[in-house]
Image 1 (cartoon, chains in turn red, orange):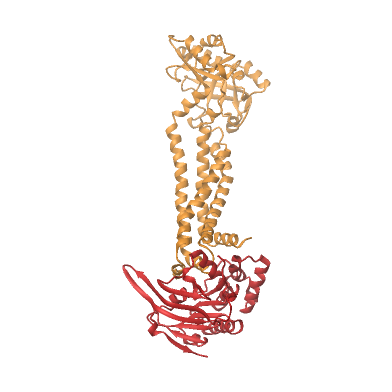
Image 2 (cartoon, chains in turn green, brown):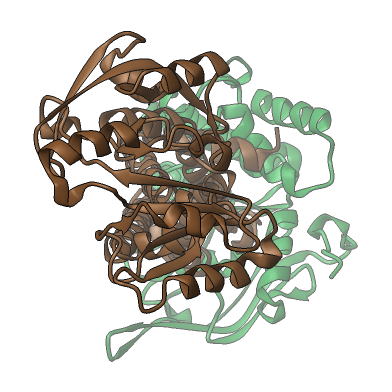
Length: 243
Length: 386
């Protein structure tokens, strides 16, 4: 399969991600627990969307579906014109590698790799030579202000610094879409502000489309649009446009 | 170094205590496997080292019963026999029964023609023929007790009554490592003359005749011819190849050998279980990392190969250390076992078996953790505690 990079799609189309009639449920023992029910909405290109809602409302599940790491029971998720729910697992992995940057609450860095090696990791899936990979990883680290921490292991960095390494890892392949699950959930206020500032800059200056799940109202206030999700039902989806 | 190799190498060193303890277990197991295999192989060394054209003639009833020495000339007269000699197991005690070593009364004039693997200098041979009380000792035995030419060695007879004194004439070497140099040879005529005085009923008898046929093609024919000569006599003979004799001897201890073999494989199975448990624990702890790798685009196969690489690396390092330690440990065991094992030489086959066992342990121990890590969904993996 030829992996279509989102950035390669003609830009005349304003909608980047389109969810149509998406439902998702989980099995808990013999019981089937619905999480998302017939959800339909669009995310525009270069948007910074914050998904908010109480615990169990299905916001992380929705993020996982958009990022292609989980599949819906019903409905379609189209990203730049491609229905990712139809992709087989191997092709979906290639699609994620080319189009999605992940930022996790607990950073999820490889503890045995240095900051530079962690950032370089996704580039090993590309055909780039080592020298070029290193250069790009250095550049990504400099974008998040960690040029002086390249040889540090994650355990030698603060939480805020680790999250910045994770952001560098997420952007190093230059994906159009970044998905962030509670990116400031494990950080103190100052580190959280630094991380949010970087994310805002990536959206504003580099045109990255960001979908962020958060409980934090101050974090959500950095987004261009907030969606409140409750009980996974479209009828509870509330849009709050900040621009 | 590729990213995969970097990750494998650093993951190996990540839980140093756990890796070290697993390595110790691996080293001990594969070392024990190697030593036990060597012991079994050495037990069969007599069979492997047997000369195909050499026959042994013994009492047909049991090898513990003697044959008349008078058979010597009659065997020598059988067509096809090139050389013949005779010997008697002495079974004496040197100071203490724990000092056991094989002692044979031999015919000094003919013995070395049939057993060329016993290397004796002309000077020593001449001295041996000169002195009726003379004895020659193997290099290993000489080293063990510090025997040197001129020393008088006293043995207490168990099969033959009384105390027996011998004068060491010299030391013999083995043609190769398989030759047992922990033996003592003395002159049969000295034994016989003494028995005529002390125990007349035991005189003029020998334990075995060894016959050199020269050609392997005539072995069956000559064996039958020798036994035919003594058919219906008071002491019928059974002539067989040295190899058949050795196999018959080894067969008496076959149950022990089978037990040793089984134990050696059980040891490998135990370390396989330990290693599999270690790898399963390791993989379970890293589920979130594996899920992260899969989320950013790495295939389940890549994740599985990380686990396989780590497991095989630990197993091969342990195997290499064990293989390196096996020869000195086997050698030390041979020394400690006194004359039970003339030498414990680790064969190439044993080394290959050890390497193969280490590899198999590494691969098999990784199978279940690889499957678990490759199959866990990204969402469930990300929820796992690190």
